[in-house]
Image 1 (cartoon, rainbow, N blue to C red):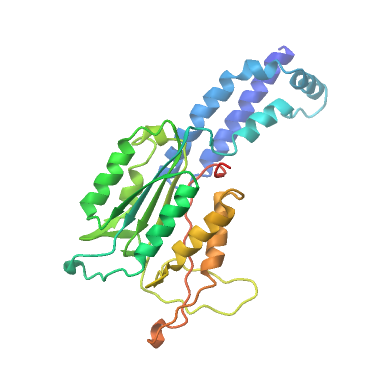
Image 2: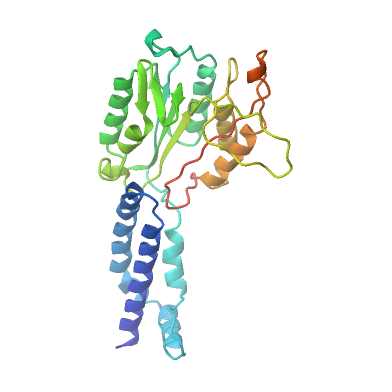
Length: 310
């Protein structure tokens, strides 16, 4: 076998092993398919580009040096490293940043038993300002029923996103664990996010899709503890909202996005959001609701680093 053929075989093994490692990290069947739809087109492209890599003198030299040593290992070359490094972050070179859908539900049908959400307009204004500053085209909607929420997101999922880097959706409403409320009742969040699966929204396949949800995830209360090093967090607590300033989460999210949006990776930003929210404590005349804490829940199925473009 020639040196070029040997290097080609090693590169194919390297790329294939990386793809399999990403698939094995999938925790659910849905995540497995998301990952597969994302990495296999890139694997095919990388393998098709092998001739370009083999033309690099540095690569050929490194391969020959490796083949003469005992205990053969995969060649490490600048050309291979550059291919892998470039694929660690999502592409942000499309003409448009993408759409940001904002659903702001304030008034609810009496049959739902849900109260008027004072302060939510302050949240909505912050979201519009923040996401526009990040380059998104923001489309706000107020007081949508369950059917209207589904219709809006279905139409967006059917849209052509080929020229867009990503998609964002911000939902401001009442909620329960796994549910978000339209003005006339609850909806499963999983059903809404599934509209943007790679097999249902192909022009967003392999691109980051961000969902930010300001809603309760349960009815427990967290009094918090004084600590120097943090505490164990539970995921189903009240989501606190000030009647004039808006919710702790949206206030913190928009502040951290403005401060770090062009500097840090998205998960680093959201960790700072958690820290900021943890600084708040509720104030209430009702003893059961006074001095309570909140911690947001971060769930990620992103397979790469996501940096907002400068």
